[in-house]
Length: 210
Image (cartoon, rainbow, N blue to C red):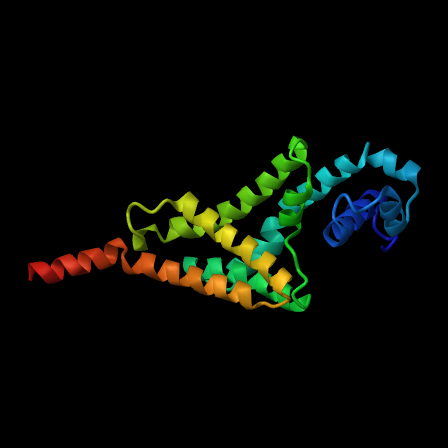
């Protein structure tokens, strides 16, 4: 870890890396201190415990969602549907770059962290909700193309579930193919929604009346 970073930032960056690589429980205090190049006195000056450091990592993910994940994807296209799939394409790139070893750090922590650790799970849920919110923005922008009874929040949540499940399967299979199959089916789901949307319904109604 470069010592040019402030001590607190080094600890957070080390924790971010080690929690992803080894898991929260599998990362010892000694691992953290050695990776960050700090002593225990410096650690406790900034954090009261490893759990407090975990919360700082989760807050960092929340702050990085827009600049790291959402904004680069949205910059590629103005079409709301394609923006959703641009976000997913970013995860595909991570899978390829890591030889299918990539695992969503939030998904891993959500499964690993004790359910009783509510402060951590609250932050994990806020991260997931931020992701869902970004996708819902796209869904809301295309509501005139969707059936009137479409549940925008449920659809955005479904997109997150496809991403998380696809990443997990690709890591287990050692291949990007499961992710690709899941995303392909999601795209078909959007196609069917748009096909049965209000514009198509109006066109069919006009055809029948004439």
